[in-house]
Image 1 (tube, one colour):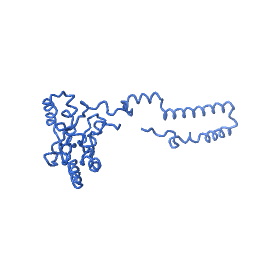
Image 2 (cartoon, rainbow, N blue to C red):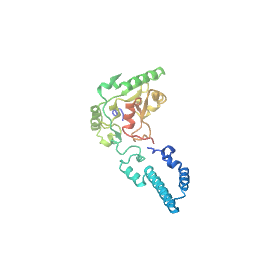
Image 3 (cartoon, rainbow, N blue to C red):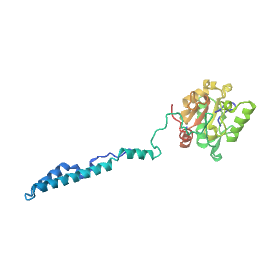
Image 4 (tube, one colour):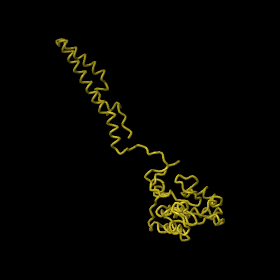
Length: 273
């Protein structure tokens, strides 16, 4: 999260019974049985009892084959249930919550790894972002400027040590308990700013709105709302966000490559409302 001191530097089974899966002897069973009866009746010397015994053996054999084939293709329900229970509950949907119960969450903030130093590049003013994010960010700021809107950078990448000073140091100066401090600043290791994908933005024409919720009344915010997605940036904490973090119209994050997308969505199993 960000504020004047509080920036935060998500088998189908086979079609059983298809013709090609059934032996020819069973597919054409009717014709074969009739043919066999004709062949049997062509031996007049065979006693009637022998014919009956032969027919019984024939039909019993066919029934046994059919039963065996059916059992092979349609295993007992109990076996299916046992298989499912032994597979680690694979395929069973998770409970319909906004986040997985296994999410690493501290005071409503999610954990993030610190970006490698060699992945970070300057975006000016002493601020850094990851390379891909930096390129898109600079293009976005340039496009806004061409439209008469001057977007300023207030914060970008922050290390875990930076966040320690913001959370514990400033919190102590203001005599804030951790639960209260977390309303305005993420604990160290739990800030989006660690990723090198997040930025806090302002409007140079209305500096009094910096890191304030009324930033959403400025030309810079309105331009971002209409155009940021073109440059793969999105608002991290809109109103009523699923993390239940305070509304931060100034805090934006890059989601324009697979790593950034996984960082904010897959890794934390965030779900739509």
